[in-house]
Image (cartoon, rainbow, N blue to C red):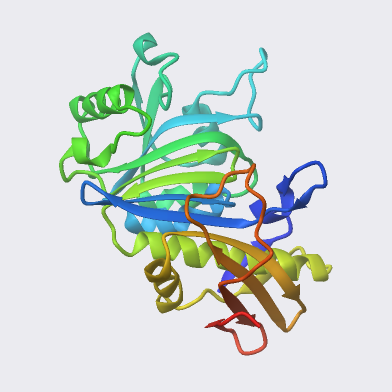
Length: 287
């Protein structure tokens, strides 16, 4: 069961001047032996447990920008100060001024035990830019410098994990606490992300029907997102009907990854159905 609050990514984001409900979007492909996922809408805190489970010992926070923690000049606080305020133990590796202005890099890298990631991204604040990569426990300063160099010299469309040997299992980039880009060696992680997105979308609909601050929503079994991924690589999902007992999501396959300027299809190639009472999900043909 996943606790879905009233202020999740699907609830606070909207599309167009009409402020239509934000759709689920999910694209997956393989590149250089990795799985690459582009998806939305999800806050980093809503995926923190999945990333922690997939991590190789520790997680490095290599970039973090937020309006939730600002200094006297209205600039984002350093990640280490945010972690200290939240009481999250970590080590700090300074990169120095050479990293300033390099996309995807802060001037310092935080390294924390993977079990501390959900505590860091606890939902009380929002990063509008966040880059995470897992590293081996006890990563040396030299290894972290090498990691920063790879991050700073990798092109936007160039696979990154392949340049790091076998030391990292995922690289996560979050934008506006809504959109995510993920590279991973873990074949189970893309399906887990898609299952979480379905759960969050259904949970946002249930939250809108109740006065409760949050609701506990069951996640689909892995076979359901795996079936969707085997059917097509690019999907968009929109709420169809929602009651406190049944939530249906229209799933439409797309030829390419969804973009904001692409209209949300009214058709459904498949329908994902959550039976709230019995706590089960199923995929059905469209009516």
